[in-house]
Length: 131
Image (cartoon, rainbow, N blue to C red; front, side):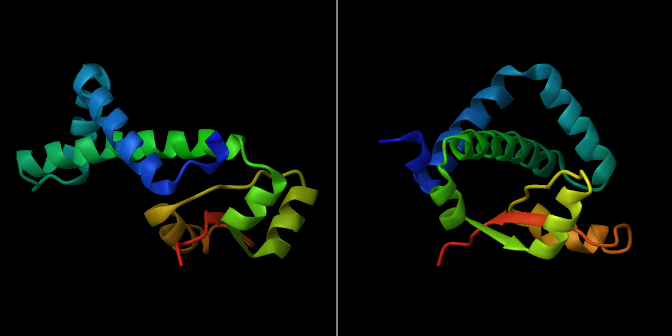
């Protein structure tokens, strides 16, 4: 099987496992993530903070695997797997020398709200939702 065609389910499973391994082995970053979560959620229980920290490691690992898979995509794969919103903004931004932002999940849903008051035209590239 080509790397470009590894299923999203396989990416999620492998990324979740990889994230848990890094969570267990990377004490320094685990400490930083927990500290940051305590600042962000001062009333959260230690159990909730621990579960959220594990989720952060898992999410990062899934994202890394998704990005590695995307590096193997052909132009056709890219057209089939990616939905572009605001293509006119993308073209204008790229012509002006800007970079595109690739987002998924909650980041993709929240980015427009975060940036709408900051940027004149924003660009969001998001993986297509499973249909």
